Image 1 (cartoon, rainbow, N blue to C red):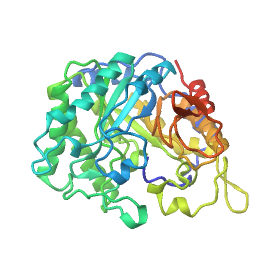
Image 2 (image 1 turned 180 degrees about the vertical axis):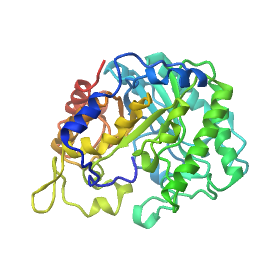
Image 3 (image 1 turned 90 degrees about the vertical axis):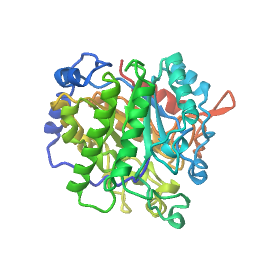
Length: 399
């Protein structure tokens, strides 16, 4: 969803080596959906990637009105039709990126208002009702928010910054772990096939050396994992990749958690004129796929995407499952470009034998009400359905 970058990072490996690595990813058995910490460590080498295909639902995304103004979601009100239609169209996964401030006392971060957690309870129950796996994610957590410090004038989004850092303040660190301790206790016993926890969206410590930031995130993730498993040893846990969800966290391989990649390559295409991608998205020409430079030369294509995702073959060598928890194209990218990019990118993700989730179900990154000029929409019960994109997505799902 955030901080997109261009398709400039490529591997020097020859195509044959790339394909060989991809071919070695994951065997054909099913992912155990309910593992204790010890069981996860003992059986992780036998695991494969979960076949989760779906969307992010944003009803609890942010208390900031400027953020919510970009998405057709009513704060706090998860919609049953979303779950019903996802099921009817063959999808089985909903990620809920959420803002902790919606249920946490601002004066005491260790206090949680249980009444304000009830909408999340409802989403979990809707997932159970319709066979949709629900993945709850701290998109904004105590002391950690990917867009923290963003210039309101530059990005057009007014928001409050986190007052402290989860990585340097002990009290904030404890408040972060408290969030997962609470959710683990609240949802204990719900099967792993129905519910998983995503520790934090796109971890990235601002303004520090990469190695230090990665070490700090690993420490935070391990503490949270331990807190969850002390309450509910069977809970499935997901860690986003480091550096905005693009780098597998090798330090977590022994912990028995799923690792999640976020795929917005190339950003000039996926975030063309997307408000929170300013100023990059306002300074590039209308994208094509393959992406071309001003002289008409291809600068990013399917092979570049394959090379960029090569790093995500590494977890499988350690028996670690992966999933693509976010991906997609914004509503200003031309529809024919969107379809071509999805076709190639999902082919590459399929080579990794991974599932995926679009950033929106409804809204500019989704299949409903994307507002993409030039799209031939079908009226769907009061919504505008991009049926071409829906059918493309359905064709790329693996059993």
